[in-house]
Amino acid sequence: MLFIWLICEKYIQPETKMSAAAFILASFTSPERISTNPQSVLWLLPLVAAIAVVYKATKVPTIKISSFLKEAVILFGSIIVFMLVTALVLCALAWLITD
Figure (cartoon, rainbow, N blue to C red):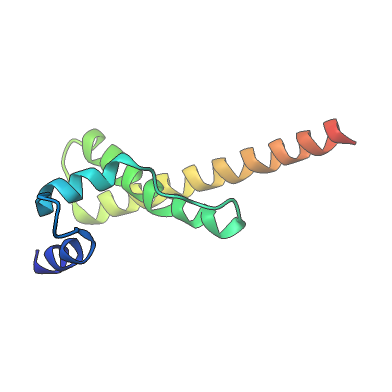
């Protein structure tokens, strides 16, 4: 918490009366800028991992760590493979349409 407070103190002007909590909440009003290069697709991996873990946590009747991790990794992999196949099909379709 001290780290967040130090960051807030750096960016908050002394003449404003904004608290650290208000500054943190205000930072969520503008979207994070992600470029359109291939490396920006790596931001997809933590999102897909979170989706896989939360989905499996809601669907598995009893959570045993070994089976839960196995099923979450399988779901993670299947989502990534599906998205790669979809991206390749869309790229091929765009290539056929524009040529």
